Image (cartoon, rainbow, N blue to C red):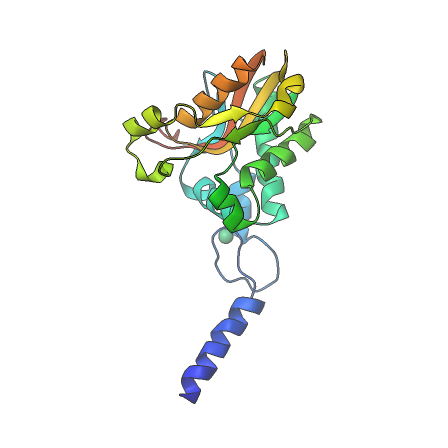
Length: 223
Ligand SMILES: [Zn+2]
């Protein structure tokens, strides 16, 4: 019993004190936030990987990008957020889009309550700071229905009708505005398309969506 107990204490102590990479969670010998390969991977992200219609992204949802998105959802840390926001701001500039305001696709209430933060909002706010543009909370989620992950791709489109609405407080900011819509991953594009629709209906002049990654099902990963 005592060896089991000391084992548990050991594991707990390790979790509390030994640093791990915030992205891939390998143990680190020094208390940095990212391991060298992850840092190099983030540094090596393409500056303008893909642009289709009104979507810009850093690349496909795999490798370092997938790991980074998952880390961001777990909470990540400021250094990871800074890197990703740097890259996202760069590709928006590269696309020569100068938004009047930046907004984000809000996380589900349940997820935000569980995590204590909305990672989409964090990302949008960090990108906004880099572009010198205000981040404005424009969108709210209508309730309810099953979570996206429980639906087939076809159903995601069908069920997405009426999922978002524009907050009254954002009406004035949106009138005639060029809007950058930030999200983490584009899967079917249903969320972005619906958010774009309600933002345009609220008077926005133009919308561009910036995401960290797109799933290979939608865009083949460039290699
Ligand atoms: Zn790592």
